[in-house]
Amino acid sequence: MTILLTNIPGASPRLYHYFPNAYEGVFQLSTINFFMAMLLTFGQGFLMTKSVFKAEKSLKNALSKAEELAELKSQFLSNMSHELRTPMNAVVGISSLLLRENPREDQRKNLEVLRFSSGHLLHIINDILDYSRIEAGGIELEKTPFHLPQLLETLRASLSPLAQEKGIDLLLDVDKSLPDFVRGDSNRLTQILNNLLNNALKFTPNGWVRLQVICVSGDGKSVGVKFIIQDTGIGIDQTKQQLIFERFSQASSETTRKYGGTGLGLAICRKIARLHGSEIELKSEPGKGSQFYFTILYELEPSSNTKPVLPAEGMLSGKKILLAEDNAINQLVARNVLDKWGVELKVVENGREAVEHLEGHRVDLVLMDLQMPEMDGYQASRLIRQMKNGLYATLPIIALTASSQYEVSEQYRRCGMNDFLNKPFNPEELYRKMAGLLIP
Ligand code: ADP
Image 1 (tube, helix red, strand yellow):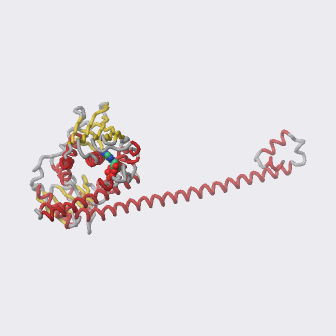
Image 2 (cartoon, rainbow, N blue to C red):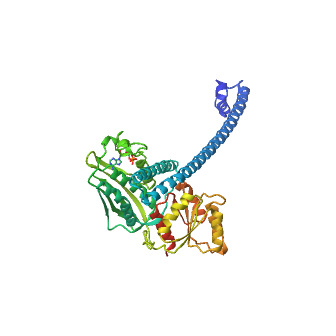
Image 3 (cartoon, protein in one colour):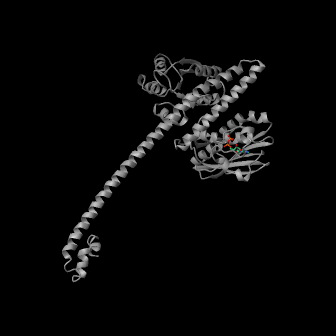
């Protein structure tokens, strides 16, 4: 009993104070026990501290290993994306070129299959990479001003050939009270709307598809914009309405065979909407149609004096453009597109040649591939910015890259480039970006 009590540090002297008789004879033992207990406690404390330090160290190790692995994964994704997109660029680009050269009827059919399949494969590659990047938390939304009604109109124009092909009416209904310019991520908004509208068109055999955009709130600083994508298509069974937002999920096992697709589109849309603090909701009835909707809060752009998003044709005529690109196929594709706009194009093979060319020639804008032998686009851009007492400090440079968008988005800015575009690029987007940088 005494030994037990005295194992509590400080207990023994206090008990002796209250019960001196009961403790006669055992005082010595208690004192020894008291010191023993103190020793044990300190010993245990020391051991515990040691093991806490040890656990902390191994946690730190595990964390740095996890960070290393995440870095490796992101590096792998970026490399893989580049490796896959470069040949895809060639396949998509060349099949488009061949289709323009008046092929025989039988050749045209094969080429159309080739172009469709390569485009589809590229879409799948992009979706998988995109999903992995979002899941790894590797994307941040941009906050730049954009012209909302023009974005919506461009989207409608780009999808109307598909709607016409299917004999479906594609309707765009934009609330007149919406502001023209808002600040946000126009690419990510386009991605969500594109996906939802493509689905609506895909799953609607007849009738109409409508994109309705409504202003639902506003306080002078920000505006709540509600996007409603409605169709008169096949609809989705109540039991599948949550499932389809999961990755690789489709409403029925027949879907892939009948309509194709990977089941990743809605999962990506949902993740992007959540990055915006929004949730995509769905109302649908089989046989009657579906309605997907979500609301995004955008900051208003106070100085709505940004240039028009879609500049007039011919604006680039006579502009001196330098293209640094090592891949012959990519050069061909770019040349084909740029020639149509009447620009004066000079093509060089790498970053070093680009820098050398700029030393002796005036150039209005540089299109810079990022991965090139001898000197890559990053290094070349850094050198260009330091050239000739700041002569090229403001020269517009657009990065062209087959790497994942999110990998380069930070790096290209740090190297002084103005903008970037993923390859294979959309000619309209390239035109818009070039005109935006060239025309005051
Ligand atoms: P994918 O279209 O590549 O299959 P999504 O994630 O975009 O992948 O869509 C998942 C599934 O949701 C589709 O396969 C389809 O079954 C269903 N779905 C999506 N949108 C619609 C729609 N507008 N009408 C009917 N079903 C739809």
